[in-house]
Image 1 (tube, rainbow, N blue to C red):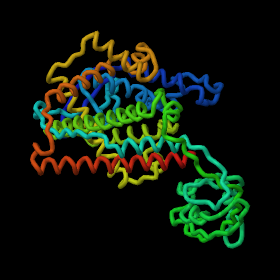
Image 2: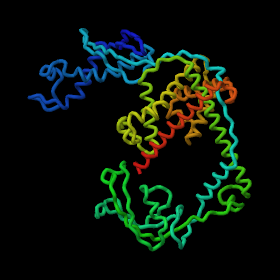
Image 3: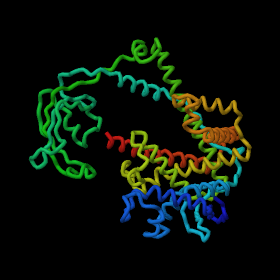
Image 4: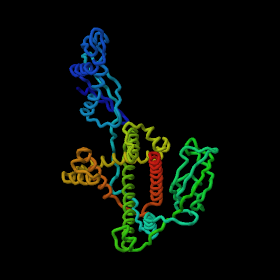
Length: 465
């Protein structure tokens, strides 16, 4: 094959033409004949036994051209981007294909090319770096959560209170008739967990073991279609009331839940762990702000397809978290899975996708500008670290991801380290007031977006269950 021409256009687009000579085209046509002849019936021949010349004589010499060109197109495309040294993103479009007078064929492809990046300042960036000391209240709350998880449920002979667990039989009635899914026996329900429809748990407060009662419930408008907004009656039988009995916060508690012999040692370890999480979060926010500013300083006309592909990648990663790893699932199906529409998508996922695309462009450009090529020793250490993180061997990691991909990831990591190491940490007082306010506003927006995504994933997981 021959790359005939490459025409680079504005807005990261290009057109190139690749020609296959007569011998290549004839080989592809004959392959198409061999593949399709079993399905061709010609009078006087057994099915699949008709010679090519006979089939072409009846249906025309072009009868196998389309299949031949379909087989050649991917080869022509790959040849064109290799010979033209083109780095493309998204899917190509065949703009023209024809058979030449010499009985060869030509393909013209329209492609979107990788954007050119012009770096701005990426050294000496000033960014807010916070420092927070974990409070006694935070430590106590964490220990109380562990205490609650280790509580023992004890049957009580008194009316149920919020926080108790009631064992109940129930059956729901709509217009006097039982409805599907509205009945259960021996169901354990923690009062205050909000795991049932609003108003259900509140009306169980005060019930004692052996008591029966009817409660009135109106389902929310966004409930299942057959019950949405409907008023129903549940008949409840209370079988048992139990209450959590919490362990004492003493040395025995510490021994039961940790490797420490005393409660004070355990508490000190909890404080240290919380402090590390707080420090790690502050460091991550600091690095994120540095990279965001470096991205803002660079110039690049980024093709829309790069953002769209990253959004789809995010959606598929979320889906894969709970086993919905279907490569044929469409964006519409993914959105339905997460209970999202395009507006929610733009608000929650699109900003994060844009930030990641810009970050990847920045880090690659810095790695190129600084000639950040890892040594063999650094690569081997990176393979080992990556393998340890996924519970595999270095050879498995190299085979699965490919050495070229891993090398590029390490180059980007080195670029990230270079940018951060050359940054200047500032306190809120040292930054200009407007700049500090802007950073706090952006942090809040990121937290809101992350919360929306987390809620969507949680809802999807509930649907899957």
